Length: 272
Image (tube, rainbow, N blue to C red):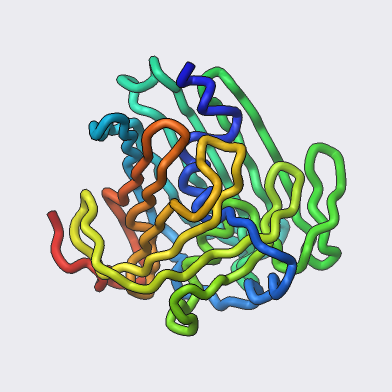
């Protein structure tokens, strides 16, 4: 019965990506355009551990890894970002996950050029290949063409774009809107800024920026704003923790390792 709660939407990588999926209006969505890259660094590698909780018992369910490298895409300078996620073998009997997400991002404008998804979760398999034309504001997927807003993002590029947001410009409670193309649909979304606080994680204690999405109902997540995300309060703005209730129990994701950040991790107060 519990397996049915984890529907065809991704379980592990989708959990990390969905932290940026929120419900918003079309109003001011273009404020997510024109950010200059500071945080994305070629060679960066981030590793996260996913924990699942039922009845006060936290169980390590799997890991997700994100890597970044420089490349060329159709003659343009680009970043190739790959996110992979898998459950531990000891957890595969419950819900086996083997996911891979990729995005090619234009280095100059930080907009996605191509997005690929290959998920295998609990017996459900799915692939997707989306190509973006930002000059014509179109996306091509499964042989079809879709109209998109200016500066539209995919679920992976949006995370890296959001890492370049200067949160000091916003008041606590402010909403930062953007648009996202997912599953052949456009969503007008926002991130809510909740201020700064210290957070203790499996890696250590950090000064952090706290944000919250308003989640879309219909996945393993409840609708509303109960998911909390903490990113490092420094120029890297790497995700440190994602914490959310789901339909049964709750899930927590902690950063457990990093390599080749663009800047020193000055937000780290002490390491465990």
